[in-house]
Amino acid sequence: MQPLKYLGGYPPQVQAQVRELIAQDRLGALLATKYRDPHAVRNDGQLYAYVQALKDRHMRKAAPLGKVIYDGKLQVLKHALGTHTTISRVQGGRLRASREIRIASVFRDAPAEFLKMIVVHELAHMKEAEHNKAFYQLCTHMEPDYHQLEFDLRLYLTQLELQARAGDLPAS
Image (cartoon, rainbow, N blue to C red; front, side, top):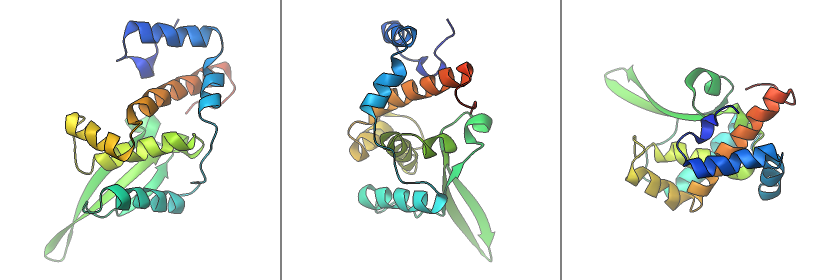
């Protein structure tokens, strides 16, 4: 059986349980039962408003966002599901910074909880650059179930990959 690339850092017993779900063809059904609600964030304008609302609720003093978009090339080119970047430009005699968040297009059709998880992750990078204890504390402050959602998102990505291999979906 092929390695579970999204679950590489998890203990062997967890990976064995996931392999068992895959062998029994129950992974997709389990996720569909647990995450039924789609989201209504379909375009970049709605995504910007969604991210801004979360930022205003949890990170009022953080620097403003310049751009938030779905990025169709993100997963393939950068091996990431979302990015947070700061772009500095010289305008006149001043240096201006613009902050951008790009979310992989796979989240346009993902369950609502997974979109929230990746947005929380990218917003946390506005304050903490590294994946350290403070970063994860900020993530769990914004989304108390962050760690479970991150694990379940990895299961979801594994399921999408299995479907793509079987020919049910286009590969992302």
